[in-house]
Length: 251
Image 1 (cartoon, rainbow, N blue to C red):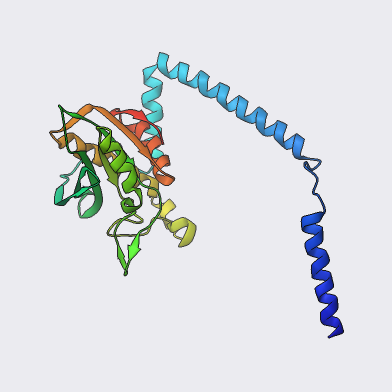
Image 2 (spheres, one colour; image 1 turned 180 degrees about the vertical axis):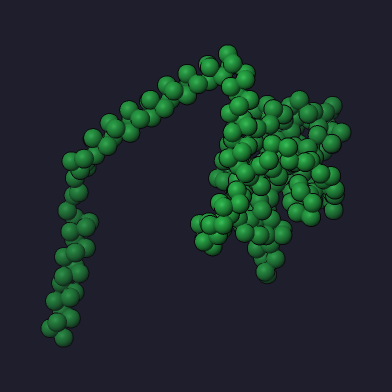
């Protein structure tokens, strides 16, 4: 019992030390690290401005960098655009907008699911937003409804403001979920050996999603933007870098 009492006293002292004793606002090396990273960020920013100026002056350099990015993503430069076999499986009215349930095949027999949000009142062709989802699943009773379910609010908001918005599932958490994080969770290092990158398939799916939007008669194909959340934000940058049809990108 006496030993238990000492444990209580020690725990109490520990709690007092944590909450009562003030910690130093800066450790000795903090300022050095702050200065180092500040200088690095400033240097990268300056180099970026310089690179952008060079690319604007030399379109051939831009083309070369684009080809390098496509290669790093594991995508062949001559990858065939096979038929999409796009299908609208149903429609819903949700909070004053029309929602179409869509699937298409970016490559044969690989199905990507999406929701297309459209304003009820349309005057002329619509500007379009491709919305790339983050890795946020929605599973109910063992059924995956796609991570697009988590981003309904954004699709509705765009449609209410006069945009068509295609919210695209990821390969990881679509209605037909598969594995996206092989190297980080499954030790699938052979992915690297064969040149496969999850970022590559997601970027290719986004390119094909643009292909699908361009088949829709209500879309103004000269006014397409892309945004996304989390991993989808990363793919948004990649898509904008490899596809000229993207006129604005804001992850």
